[in-house]
Each structure stands twice: as C-alpha cells, then as structure tokens.
Image (cartoon, rainbow, N blue to C red; front, top):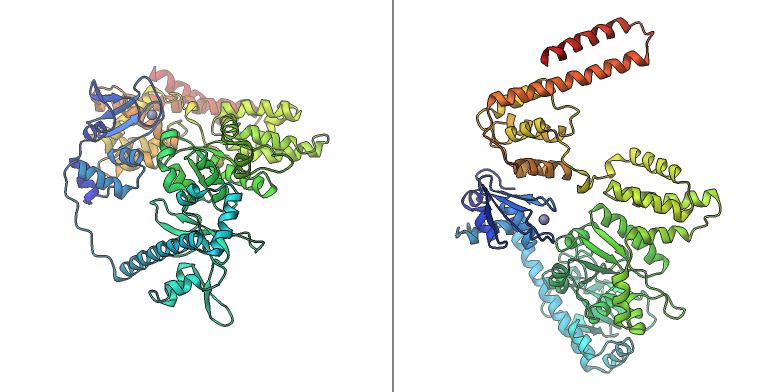
Length: 588
Ligand SMILES: [Zn+2]
C-alpha cells in the first residue's frame, strides 16, 4: 500500500479519484458523491459510488471498494506498482527513475533474458524439425491422425524434438555455456559420465508461454511408446509450473470478456477446446491446480468450469481443484463428459469424435459443483449405514465451503433427499462440523444485511472521520469495553487502534484488515448521508451503548439466578440485579 512519503502516496494525493474512475465509468453527480454503473458486475441501475471527499469508491451491489489504486488494480487486473504507474501517467506525474538494482539482481535478470532467448531459439529449431526432416514427417502424420492440421500446428507452435540425442545441444552449444544450458532445462547432464544431451528426444513439442506470451518451457509428448508419455521442462529460473497456466497468454482477453474460464488438464485438451472456437480455456498442465495458478486466474475471472479427464486421476484432481477454487471464492461448475463409444472421453477425444457443437451444448449445461459431487456420492454404496456415512463424509468438506448459509441449507435438503438421509440428522451433522471448523466458513454477502444499529453506525462514522475528537472517543470506547460483543466489534477494534495512533484514518487500509463482510459494512457506513458529528452526539451514542451493556448484564444475572436458585451467591446476584435495574431506570 501507499506508505507515508512514498511516491505512491504523493501520486494518490494529487490524483483525483473521480477523474481516474471517470475514464472507465460514466459518472453522474448525486449529492456530494458520484455514481454510475458498476464495471465489476452486471447491473441496470447504478450502485457504484465514488466519493471525491473521501477519495474512495464502493459498489453497493458487489461490494468492491477502495481507493484509486484498488480501482485501477481491479480494472486493469494489475499489481500495485503497475497501478501506481497507471495513475501517475493519467495525472501527468513523472515517474521516478528506477533505482539501480543490486549487482546480483541485475545478473539474475540478465540470466532470465538469456534463458528466454534460448527458448525462442529452441522453438525455432523444433518447428524446423517438424517441417523439414524425414523424422518430422512421421510426427506430422501422427499429428494429422490426432486431427491437428497445418493450421493448428502453426497456431500453437507445435514442433518436433528429433531422436538423435544432441541435435538441439549442437545448435545451442556455440552460444551458451554449459551451466546456462543445464539451467534452461532444455539440456540434461548424464549422471555417470557427466555428458550433456537433449532433454526432449523423439517427442512432439508444445511451447508453454508465461502470461505475457514469452516461451518459458516446453511440454513434450512421446511419439512412440517411450515413457513417460508426457515430459515437461523442469523448474528453472524462468519457469515454475505452479505459476503458469497453459494458453493463459492467449486466453486473457476472452476470459475477461466472457467472465468465465474452462479449466482442462493438458495442452492437447486446451488446444482442442481453443480450436473449437472457445478461447477462454486454460490448462493446469499437471494433475491438479496450484494456489498461484488460481490467483493468476482470479485476476481475470472468478467463474470456472472444470473439465478434467474422467479417469480416477482426473476425478481426484477435479475434487482437489474444487476445494482450492471454493476456498478462493470461485463460482465452480463441473463438466464430466460422457464416454464416446466405450472410451472415457477427455475434451480432446470428445471434440474430435462428437464435434464442437455437442461439446458447447454440454458446456452450457455443466452443473454446479454440488450437483457433480452429489452424483459422485450416489455412486457409493448407499444401502448401508456405513456407506451413507462415507458418502456424507465425502460431501461435508465441500458443503462447508459454500459461503452462503441459505445455499448451504438448500443443499442440505437436496442431499438428504438424494442420499435418503434423515434431514434433521444431516443438519445437525453439518452444524457440528461447522462449529468445529468455524474458521473455514466465510459469510456470504447476502447474509450481511444492515445488521448494525444506528448508534453503532454513527460511532463508526465518527471514529473514521471526526478529526477533532476521534482519539478522545476511541479512548472512551476502549476503556469501558463498550464495543465488546457487538456485531460490529471487529470494525470498532480496527478503527479504535487506528484512531489511537493519532494518524489520519485511511478507510481502505482499515478495510484491508477486516473480513469481507465487515469491510463491506464499513464502506456502506462511510457512504451514508450524515451530518457533521459533534461531541455531544458522540456522548449520547456512548450512553446508549452503556445502557445496552447494562441490559445485557442484567440478562446474564437473571440467567444465573434461574439456573442456580439455591447457590450461596444468590444473595449477591439479587443485589446486583437490583443495582442494574436502578441504573437502567435512572437512564430512562
Ligand atoms: Zn459492483
């Protein structure tokens, strides 16, 4: 974030959020604020609001909100430093000269540049091998047999690594030293003799590009029966397989436009789907998805249709990926393709045999992940109690990850029906599991409501904005522990800490410390119409909270009295009750 005194902070102070946002969204002045149609979700009436005074934005529909940098990061799908650059340019502020990097950093950077160049050369080499050699001819015949014509070969840069064992090596050796060659992963070293040789031999090659379209690795499929069938580049200074999604560089635009991704397992599947005219496809290029890959994808869309292979490995990869996607708040559907003839079908085989229209149709009908999981659970033996228990245990972890309580409840009913499980029993199991793993369950936006009471909202607003007495107010609240147990407790706690620091309170930064539902509530409160706060008003809000505290104490005392009427401390409890009742009566 924008640290005090940093360039980012200077830019933020000079930039006008209304002007910057206005370049993306048509804004209309409404009172003190501006509003328009939200660029982050589909809507017909404007719920997207920008405050020139607070220099923040918030959408009452989807809950996105923050400062000018958050807006640009979401809009341009970029990281913070890039957003600073964009805003600076828009406001005509000159960027500071890049600091000279440390010698090591510069060396690493140089090495990466060289490795990328080496991969570019290897790509040219593989393509030439496929086009112009007798061995390449056999490879082309194989590709044609798989339905990959000249057009597809050119479009996806498919090539061929010959069987010789050192053809690429001979090509690269004059230009690069041995260490670089080995570091690139294109060349391996023989363990015993220490001799160098080509990593890929007698294989069809598929270039794997990073997000910006630079080739950083290769995937290679054996032409004959060589094992393994698929061999990829090892991890290298320019390639980490958990950071890269195959076809991402070409899918970006379509992902953004269509706002969903099709996730497949391998490059052959991605190529088949892309050739069917569906560009928003990416492949994980490994059996299951890694966290960084999900984050990369999440910059473009939060909706995914998982279409992995139907075999056992594919099924468990699907389930592992589901868990991870749900944890990252993705909306997930699952496409499990029906067999073609008696063969289990991956996307590649299915499209070749049944055509792209059939595939598109199934894609449109792909069920939400819970349906897929129920279907999987139904394949288990449900005739015995243990079998049902197993099915339920299989489903539970996923159900718990559904953020919305309403949806969770609906699914409970459906599961009970489909698995023929007693519904109250199922609900209590869900409830119990939820309690034990509370931290894993998040509350969805539809449950937020406007729960906070007016007094709490007013105090929150004052803590955020009342420059004159914010610090004093924070002390009062903290000393009397007045916000403990409130629904808004965490918002108060964050604001009190910020106010006590004596620094200006930045809504975006406080928001970043909060859970999603609290962050949203904070922004909603900040955008409410409100009068100038006064100390008198603050004090009357505090009194209201004290009153509430006394009421609660009274209820607690009453409960203790009822629970344990013969206890020796009964006398003390009765006295306390009288005291509290007097205090409450006096306040009225
Ligand atoms: Zn929105």
